[in-house]
Image (cartoon, rainbow, N blue to C red; front, side, top):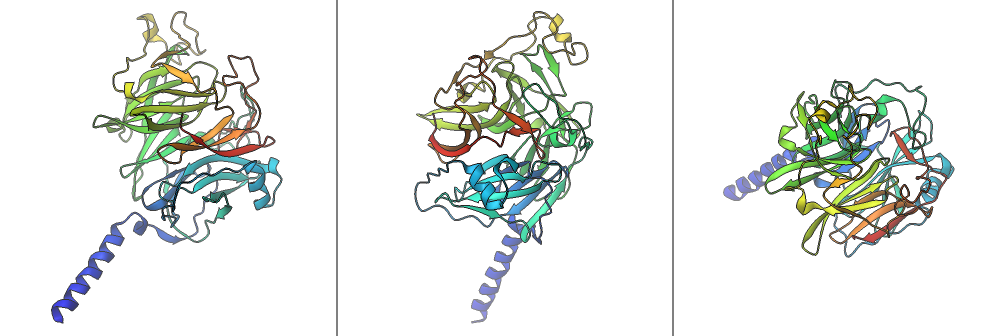
Length: 421
């Protein structure tokens, strides 16, 4: 009996120790005081990371949503923005959708929104389950922790809106967090800093203890014909080639750049390798990686060039897109302040070949649902697959309050499950 009691106590002790070492065990119960739900990403144990540009912070929140679905999931909600607005008791034109992700454990969909269009809009996280039921995921009594980012851009909440693609928020602070992802014990955060290399990738160890400076990024922007350090990553995904981990980062106008994760060091600077140029006059909105028919692909949704697909199997061997002449080596944001200003330095498209997915139009956000399906948020407006080349008006955007810009809430937005192309 003594041996049995000792064994039981040992099991209890080890179980408690294991819980204390778990990701969820590092979080404390209380209110997650999020001021703006700009971007979201999932980590281990169903933990939801919420990027808060307004506070220049990242929250880790235990969703306790870890039960796997009983069968295949197909979620479809017509006019989902109108249904969310009704749930929150506001007109649909007062709802801004900021980001969407799929919980990889439960396959439930989480959506980050702003309840209101002004600078004091309230952040809300919604959950959409396998039965397409929408509910609010409340933040007032959850296990959570917060990491405050260093070197964030200055907050200028009264800055005027501006922008060639529509109205965008000129407050530098909202560009602190453009995208996030969890990778092997680290939360990667892309956006702007106040450093000389303003384009920044922060690598924050989780559980949160200490937050260091991020890594400044320099890359060759083929469509602009110059090196750039101030243009922020708009969307990215971690991607492994062989045994080496990379970040595949997409920028406006629209290069895709490969960045080694091992070179993301506190206060450091890294030179990314441009491997794809998807064309000028467009902004990437979302990215995902998937496998089909034994081959690997990257899918990118953009504002005006549609949804584009290219082979991920070529990422490791792709030829670098760089300055085509020695003179172009001197082209940068200081010497060539206007994109394309130095003759002979630009290309419109190049690198790994891509195709435009004609059947996917108006896609605003997308996330992988399982090995064969994705979910997309799409505008009902019948855009051309490539609105820019077809001479159509680009998607209507408005100034965000948690993000740089967002889709005009006056349009109906559908949530659909699609087969991966």
